[in-house]
Image (cartoon, rainbow, N blue to C red; front, top):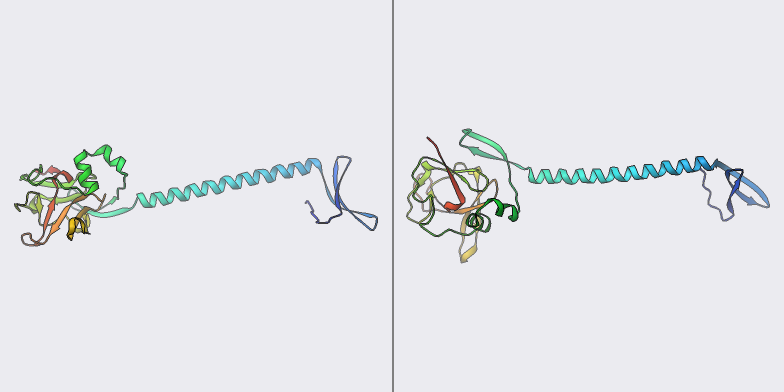
Length: 221
């Protein structure tokens, strides 16, 4: 044990390889605990190792916590309806940067789904598609609409009276272009799909006006 005494007259004396702590009081030398130089250096080395180990432990803990936060954010699970599984499933919510989306989407797909652009009317690939199947998000593959809900609206864009399930899409108020509309987005990746209007056929009375370029189609026999 090393004893430290704060005193203006306390001194360290090296004597025969040992360190002695002493104080002079009324011309009398009073010695305190002493240790060998070798033991002293060993204690210093142990303390140094402990400090370094503690520092590394704190750094590792901090990194693990950061990774945990990242996983919690990027690994968020959402419930959506799956046509293939004929029921609800949990899928990981997808978050990508614009640079990452650019690498997997065409320029038109990117502008529509990530920058809320709109394809020209009557030009969409799926406008006149009458095959039986499921329409999925072009970005993440989330099931969005089925062919049984598609109808001819005469507006120039593929139209559906309902989505696969309410959990598969997100509705958001859109105040762009000096009007108020309801934007439709993919619930899994946030892709802009189009807008929904209240002038559709029964049974919902809704018209989901969707950009063909935001969709991919899988035929079902």
